[in-house]
Image: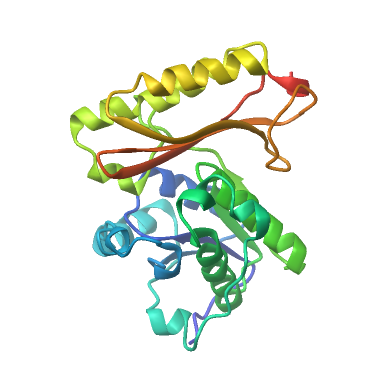
Length: 265
């Protein structure tokens, strides 16, 4: 397989169903390289639920149009056999991969790291852009790159939100208008926690806000140390609230920096 790329390359890995959040990743990538590769591959290894994999939104034609308009110079839609020509070598996400999302999506982060490493191997980018919305994913990718000493700079891109505050996600397509209104309560709960002056109050406001969202089934909500993924305390410099749950079978995740808390004031 020859992608015929002009290095340096900036890679934006995606699973398709692109939206304005992905467009922002591509625009950021353009700041680092004139050659921007957008990959579109729905990776079965990171789905613990086969039904979730089969029902994941797919819209290749509109994805190619959005990626091109946003500035991608190469849109790559590899086949399963191109990514995994033989049995894949699974990359373990370790202890942090078994926390939070890892508890509720067994094996998800192992599959995610495995495909990201394969994409890195095949594209050989100098830069790769990932969104902060998937905060634990971003943390683990940075950790893998550091531990493997890969010559790639990981660029963190801020979460893009709808006007309601709902974090943009391909999965939002599954929500009805009423469900989207409910889902917007997640960001309001995070903002409420962010306004608190101490961790105890922040945690209480976060939980209170989330439990008040109609039809929202909470998986977890916590304020962690964004540099270690340990539970935050008053000495934590980088407090980050992370949240996940469900609305009518659609999984929603979000996070927000708690700049008023701990030593991050």
